[in-house]
Length: 395
Image (cartoon, rainbow, N blue to C red):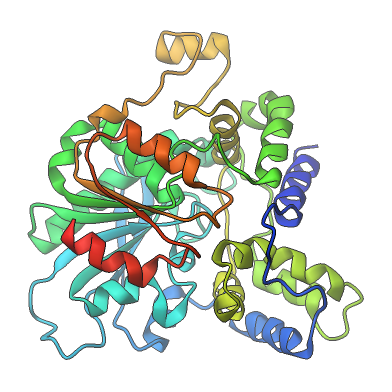
């Protein structure tokens, strides 16, 4: 039952679109087939090797959270420039998607934000939190339901502070920069609202396509899924479990989209969201390739349920366990809201009209809640990486 519901949610998300103009092709070309084969051949390659293949240095660091999860940081200590690699650089932590946080940050190849920042002189760190294929736990293995007993609340409360403390401890710096892209904007707000002392450890925050208040999303797929999760939320979230999605996406797409497949016509729908988010044909093939080549993705069911709770209710709140359990955990029948007034770090926001997941209405509302933002930057189409850099440094 759980797997069927999850499949329905994924299908709705991948096949629904509200943008009037799309760069997605209606038919599969020979070029597409070659791309699919390239994906399959590269699927599963460690991300740090992909970074090195792109010409940048990379390191993998393991971090243990207070509640026992072993999570990872990908470091790009310097860029391709001729700057002395021994020079102490300003550390910046980047957090992207909750499904595949490392590759989601690198999907534009040489134009990817981590590379742009590394070339600009930053010491770049990308967080890979609990639930991904690289993570583990000191006590529970991934077949234990307790391993999957987490939502945005735990990621923000434990993982983000663990990343910050590790980076500052290793580099000897007192503060770092933070860039949140989409989901990364949520978890930093959870962290700072729950543990305000971490405001003192951040120099500036850049919110790219903030989804902190997601109730104004224009995505029909998201809204349909939110309604479905409202009907089935008690079933989906009652017992901790892994979200039963496809882990090895690269191999799965290759199976569906190879030259001999009878389902080639299905393949473009899988890429529609990625291409629509960028709304730029120049980036389409690169995004397809990068978003799939890393291969393995996983997260908890509670992460999905929590996201759809926020989407459905248009409130940035703790996980909703239901009236009785909420009373036990929070002392109230409804989950408490996160107080964004506790987020005191100077910040900027970057958004676009073309982003159906985080349209301008969401960002305007968010900026009104965040009393510390210094710049409200509007780009269309939403290719943030290079344009955002100057604003981020100046803010």
